Length: 357
Length: 68
Image 1 (cartoon, rainbow over the protein chains, first blue to last red):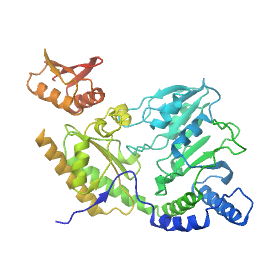
Image 2 (image 1 turned 60 degrees about the vertical axis):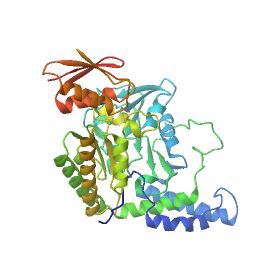
Image 3 (image 1 turned 180 degrees about the vertical axis):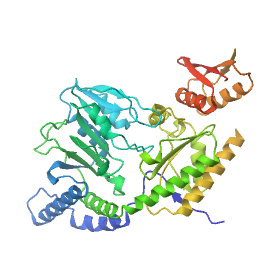
Image 4 (image 1 turned 90 degrees about the horizontal axis):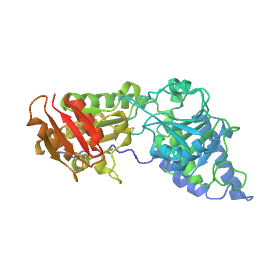
């Protein structure tokens, strides 16, 4: 029997074109673009081209984007930059990323509950504040009802968390800041794009050094590689439809073959390439190990797989089962045969584990 | 009422203990589940939804589970 090996973790190898560009970028973009010498001038030129390309690919203006070398800090910059004082109310979904929740807690946090489909349930609020709007959830793939939610907060400034997808068609019409992560388009880790649409309302919340709006501590070669990955991602959007078909098949197989299983969200209102399954009476860590032995690497939101032994706050907020959870990302290039083999492995592993219990 | 002590156990053990105890009682009867695992509350509520039983938290580490 041929052993199939598949990566269904959130992380993926660099896009091959970005990998190729990376070495060349280290060769050409090593100098400090802010200095006055020939090599720096070349680096400056490369950086400007990169900024213009990113702006074009993300339908932004070049002058409204900043590059960050620390994506997780970007959540703080995006939200806190729009807050006027420590008394500012920060509204966020109960399924928001931990970094967003941590940032909100530095101000006046207002958690918005979600239903079992991951949709925010709240009353309109006409006061001021900052609404942190998650475009799509990284654990479940569920796409937020951004227009509906933003209209419930007509006077709030909006900080978009777009770190799960560079698909700007999912953004609301009105927003003030937005954060994108290079890894969402198979670019290198350690590069984020902070877009500041409303520059009059955004202030750098960090101690100011120089005249730049954010710390300029990113790697230019990584940025150049990220640009190549984003261009490749945008040039092959048809792959998205194929991944949606594969995900549909996988969800159907699991749903029809395994009883007592929670599948997070409806695929019609989710990103095409993410799924989260929770199997009653199964141990998340053991399930991950069993699937790994069978050649498939996945992620899990179960408490037994987390550093702090706490269950996924996303699944808990939705009222879904947190134990026996596996979540998977279907990367571009994944074949139908790999999905079929993965489905078989999940079905067999769950049956085996339940028989043991 | 039967008491099931799952304190010190981690997910999914408290839910497995609860399911075994519920299987041994009649419809309409209840058990008390003791568990200090932070995953028990969300998982017990999800278990009750999936198996058509009822469960509620009565104190920090105590849950009342009724077979329907």
